[in-house]
Figure (cartoon, rainbow, N blue to C red):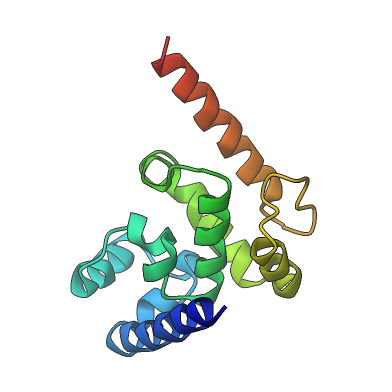
Length: 142
């Protein structure tokens, strides 16, 4: 458990440093134009994909999104390149969600494959992406 706490502390410090240098990336993505996002990412040395990887997520709600995507086995790179507009909408909904405690507990308990995350306003979207990516992988392996 000490390693988990240490990782959280380091992530928190890194987040604060990134926000200080680049506060635009801590905002909800739907509040920014794609050009503003890309400019801020370039200054931070990040890509759009990095926004949805836990260690680079910068905004607290985006850490939860990154953890959810990873837990569900969603290919973030593919999602960013194929469905950026929807991902920005997911970011917007998550940033305003009132179920953050339940989401955090669900992720901490390691329950991504044990049932519905009905509390999540993005659950339907996440399930559809999992199905699409599984189908895509199956077609690629045929």
